[in-house]
Image (cartoon, rainbow, N blue to C red; front, side, top):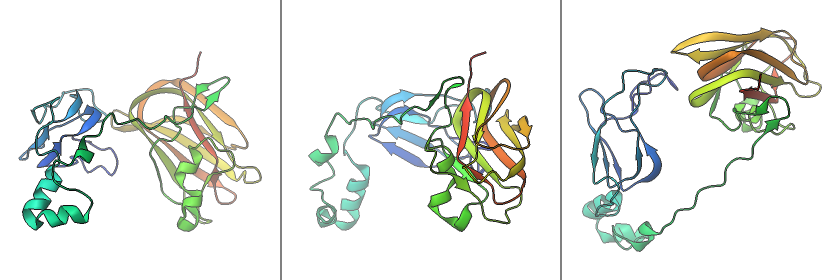
Length: 254
């Protein structure tokens, strides 16, 4: 699909690609200029959308063949591997053939949902476990990664290196999301932030949602309901390295 300016801003995700006998909730299959993408033998809802961050025009679909009915060979990858290297290559990775019964085991069970994090005033946290990107991570380790600000665990936090210049943490809302409040928290003893701003990506542009000075153990900023595709917190000034243990997004009751 055409992701527009999402992620790294590279636009089209793939061309000349095939989804073969897949099982998913939804599919977005589009054709980039000069290329084709296919979905063959796939089960799941077909969805047509505009480019991310836009509402129009709706982009045309790629090619769907045998939608809702799996085809043979069951695995295109295994069939190609057997053609190139013979059946011994299949045996080496644990399969008997490109139509191995192990490929047809159903039903596939869903993973359990992430536990909800519900604020008694603001409601459910809509940021929990979303994809996140940061400009800086302390020590370049997972211990202080951006995801630690979205895991609803007060003992973990995102932190930057000592001399990071206006670092930011950016949440991908995975589609349009209505919000009207944000909650911020610093870890105990690390209340270093002196100035910050919060922006939302609206119609491909960054819009200021909130700004402030100190954060401390709990800070809530409210603003008019806004439909965003990303949310970015930028630390403008701090007395030490910034650390955020919670960045929550909410569509709070009036």
